[in-house]
Figure 1 (tube, rainbow, N blue to C red):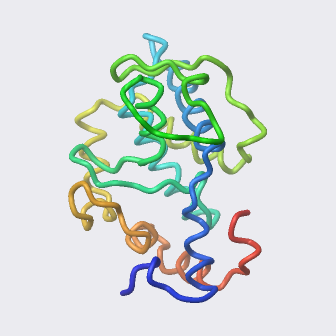
Figure 2: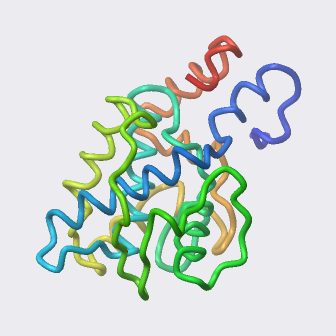
Figure 3: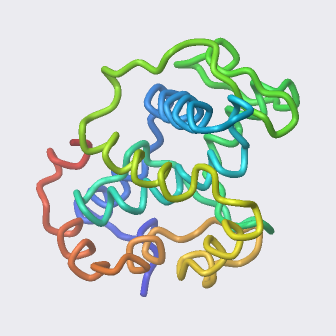
Length: 200
């Protein structure tokens, strides 16, 4: 199978559009997940590992149920599981150990990061998140927000899209889609929906 990045014409554009990262929405996802996990935690903070894994699983849920990503991040198959590349860069920038340029947002104004512990400096902006976004984020948080590291690592390592990727390589778009229980149905939808619907 060809990579989606190799597709020509409208079909290739249509599929690639769902994976264009939305900086503003990405930051609100981090704030939302961090706030929700912190509310559940006795320490009133969220662990970096859990936050990023919640984002991964929520994006997969949303793509499978609604045919689009939430923020369209790229996922890298790192040693401890799949990692949303841009969201991780935002966290590192907020922690002071990242040299990344986000022209639309300032992650440090929203997140306080010490080691692997995340806290928020403000409430999330509800205008960026749809009801379906929050539905899938809440499902992921309820399942994985406080899951112990070893158990969550095992769960994320079992994901088919992670297992087929090279370590420290980007998970391919086709593997991401086809790892869904309804992957073929989603793939067909992404190939046939109108271009104007690509960012809905």
